[in-house]
Length: 131
Image (cartoon, rainbow, N blue to C red; front, top):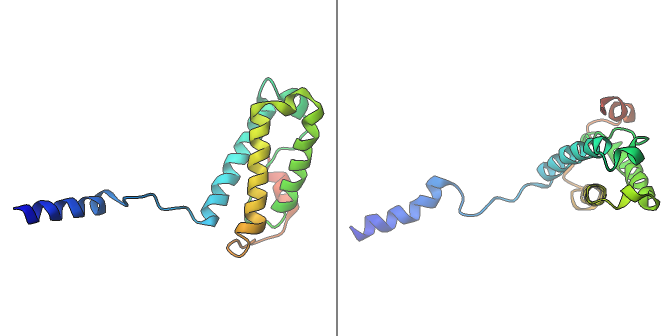
């Protein structure tokens, strides 16, 4: 009786899944971050508090399979940093987006360097897919 109860307790985590979350791979992490950044960049262009000063920004589309994504993120970071003189550069949404783009830039360039494979190098695709 005690042995079957103990066996049931041991087997329960296996039935329910892992007892601890499985960490994402570097590849899945940058894909998820790229999607979220693309969405947040579109939101700050529509947001009442930030649309006036971000209207001139190009639409941002992050495609982690395109080698041009690094230069695109670098340019966008530069534009976000240029908002510091303006009132909207200090909003929580802009600060959060700047931090996320910077984090993805570092992760892609340094942490996941050997794990990512850029399947094409076409900067025009990033510009045409945005929006």
